[in-house]
Image (cartoon, rainbow, N blue to C red):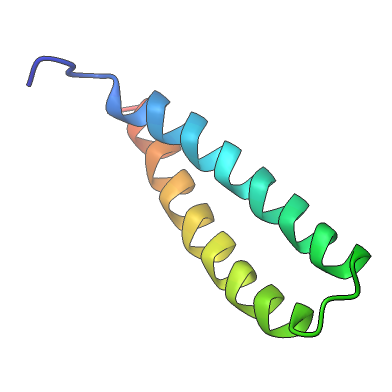
Length: 64
């Protein structure tokens, strides 16, 4: 494609940003003592886990 070699660094940047945003969102739910904070935390932690898998794949792709 046109932007060959940009996928992995862009994936690392976006994935890292998404993980940080999810962590801050969980903190905000707990600070607000939200009714569904535990349900949301379970979903957000599942998403963070998937993001870590993608982040690991992108880091491996960076060093190939």
